[in-house]
Image 1 (cartoon, helix red, strand yellow):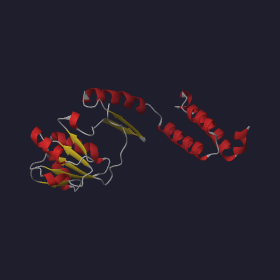
Image 2 (tube, one colour):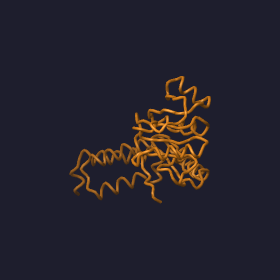
Image 3 (tube, helix red, strand yellow):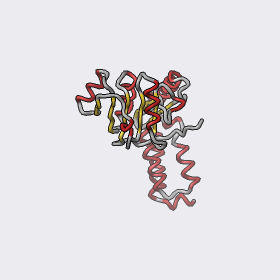
Image 4 (cartoon, helix red, strand yellow):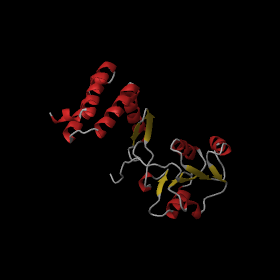
Length: 212
């Protein structure tokens, strides 16, 4: 594996999509939640992309690809049904540009994982182009776990982490507390969560107790 899995902030970043068909529409729809500035270059568009253009959600350049289209863009997506055009798009990119070629994952510099988001948890699974369907199946398995979580438990974890990070705890104490709050009995038991939170708050406001 040569690709580094990481989370990247693409808000307001310039993204260009070459192609206006179903695959291009799918890629664009997966990006919209992350609020980039998307321009699609294609003589024709899928109807759902037309709607996005009319709503000023994305921009449209109604013509075939020009080499200059990729200049200054953060992400490039080659999503036409013409392999030769997709290859020209790749050849037009600089080495520091991220490009996804929909029909050539091996020569893409990034892939689209199967994504699930809920309650500040993001799950992203990729098989590096081997089997997108397997990636989706794995994502759905993890999603089922998240769906079964009490949203209040996630807020509890967030509050605990904040207090532990800001409090005067040793490295070992932090490790123990952050591990303890993951125990199963806290998942759905609000009383146990309250007891644990009281303990954390007591140690937070009375740091001298940490030295005992």
